[in-house]
Length: 120
Image 1: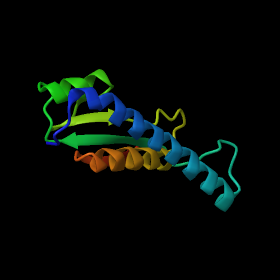
Image 2: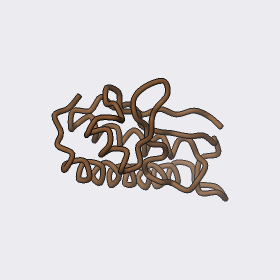
Image 3: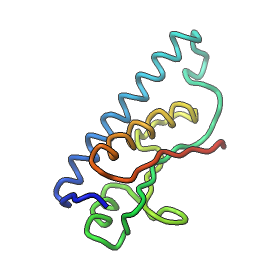
Image 4: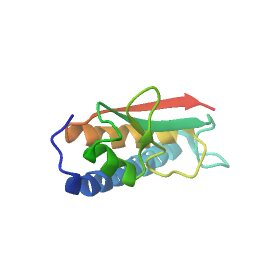
């Protein structure tokens, strides 16, 4: 578990979301350039993506601070936040780009974070 003060959580998660949104925008721009786009303005494979933090219990001060910012109990363990970029489309690839960027920021702060996805 990282040595993070609960007062730092808001900053870290804001930074992670900014990078996540940027990754979504960059992915879509690149995808449009490569493919010419389509009527839905996103790849057509629907699904979900989320970030899991392992090794942090929701009952700890850090866990409670994360839960205040949208994390929920993960299954089977840990904490999760789904669609961290808050992307409104259905494309799993776009959501994956956002989740990967979010997890990378958390990893940079010492969290054991992974991005995950599944098809719809």
